[in-house]
Image (tube, rainbow, N blue to C red; front, side):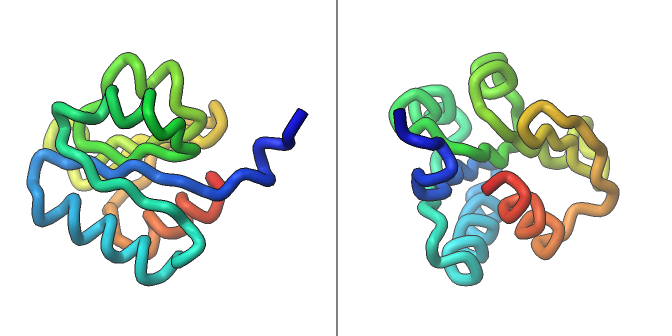
Length: 111
């Protein structure tokens, strides 16, 4: 049986605003080149989760499938607030004031 940690780190990024989605995905690609990043539309999130089995999902809308099947996830700006809800391997936390450096820290912790 393969150890999951031996598999490459992969992340799905989705946000209803294309510019946010692409900025986050592009930053992860540039600063974490070993991480495979898929940028998908909100409507394609569940399909992408099933197709790519990511270790982390960064999203603006948390679907039931992501909540129950993704090992780690980040919900950006819930209810329009400047914060993120994070679950890393089942450990839940709130992250105030979302910034790209904080998202990169989450990527590193979910690896």
